[in-house]
Length: 407
Image (cartoon, rainbow, N blue to C red; front, side, top):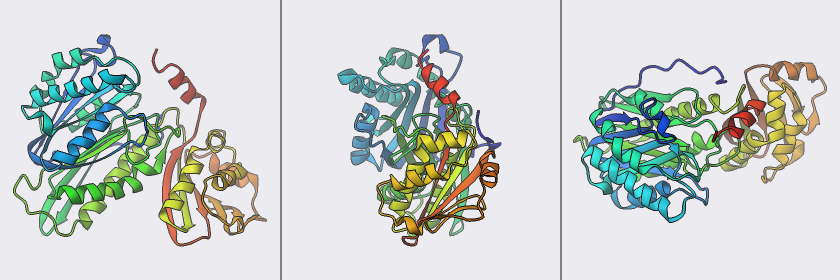
């Protein structure tokens, strides 16, 4: 039920990286050989790395171990190993053992030291992790390593996604052409609090690990932290960026602004693809919040509207129930003056400075809400800050997908 999924260009190879996949039957032995479900992203040199992870307090072992690895080895990461079909979360002490074994299997398949490996898992929570099947077949990923296999990797990290998600970009900095390629997965349990469901970006731009980490937090706040499908934050949300540039002999960038802009745009594109592919989503809705006292306030208000079940079901029913939107704004926990608020749906003015716009008609509002894509604009009248959030509707199909998720 994806909303206008774009035709994606072939992902670009990134100097210093090779990618491979394997079919391990992670979710079920019956799927072995039928779909790729484990991915290796291998740096040919020591890479600088950064990551942001879920704030869910029930965090998976791969998240906890990833944070620790980045504290000690952020300037010499060589591999990301990721599986789809099982989250390896909520499993007590064994979860940590299995996460460590996944890292060791990834290190063995890539021929690197285990302390230079980051891992990520996605899928069903609370189901024993099939590490033996992964150990038995992960060598396939090592044997298939190629600079051209990013599209394969994007497919291999899918769970309920209906299409694979990737994006590439190139920038020119002082006469040097650098490449960024990223892949992401996500369709349900989408309400990131710092990251995406799974997202991996590789680049040959020479960025120091410290600059990459501080930059990534800003980028996540303007991309993956600005999307919501169902208001649920996963136990496994992970966004990782690896740079091979310095290992390839380039001097660190002094001015990283061009790169940060490119990374932000790439992550926004990946984030929007996730919303377009949201479970049961039939509409893609942009929520523009302006006139906020701070960017954080604007994001909080936008997310409150984006996750409201009443607002999302109104989107699904093409019901221009503007009162539900204003109620969500008032429930966001942000200081507002209701007499300053203005609300539009596309170019239809609905509410202005605390009052229903006299010329507004429900017919005009309904016409906007019947579209597959539209924009809700909120001016809070409290300052100069702004933020854009992307979301979808909430349909019967979402319930069906998640009621049958484990069957």
